[in-house]
Image (cartoon, rainbow, N blue to C red):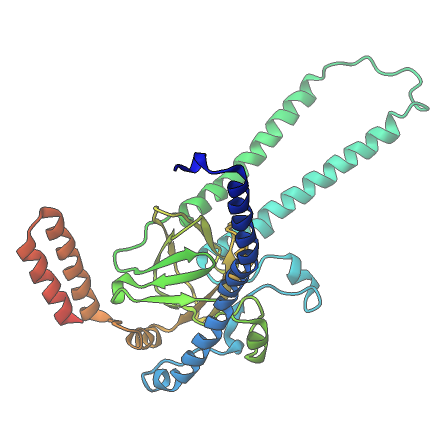
Length: 355
């Protein structure tokens, strides 16, 4: 007997049982999803505990995590400094300083002057050409001189603005030099991963710290993370961004840096941080329910301290060892493309020996 041959009463009974089962399991499914969503902060706490437990080892190798006194790039509250809360953050890159000066000393004066000039014209027209002072309205429809002026002046202003604007755009998309340190920022829902392909290919996973833990450590809530993106200061960085799921955006305002992280695409930009410190940012592309809870924390160290930190990471390499490992990986990739299995095995063996 087929399903269609069942009596209507039996079909009704089976349908009722299925509906009851779904309703009974629905709360458990929701609870499981909530538990999975809440597991990220707990994992972050465990990671902090592991990181603090490994701090002594890091110190013995020459690396000590920076404390809250080294925070340089973060938002300012209105209560702390009303003016700073509405202004750009202090800038710690050459591009950031150039952009800030352009905004403060070029764009703002021009905008202010134009706004006051237009306001003055409006007030003049309201008073001078009001109905009581002009019972018979003017019949003038054209004024060649005025029309030439209000065409040429805006053009000259835009040309004056265009020169530094194009300069800034060109600076922001300057190609990283060959010796730049490559760091790949990978956006996940909803945390960041930082991969170091030039230094052994290890990846650091970064989750936001729970608010209580951040405050207890003297760090800003909803900005502090368990594992920061550690980079060398005064060194060209090749920042590459991609994403594992949806579009994210890697943005750090105090470094004048923002670049999209798109699945299946590798974006790249040059970044050079002028001085050591901690700089905070956030994902700037709406990426889902926890979009507001995937902050970015960049820790810039002196070069020797950064190399010491790299050596504390699993498989981390610096100097000649890192260059040899990168060359071996490139040789393996080339051999794989050429279909040379023997060369692939040889390159992989050399890479393993280097590690």
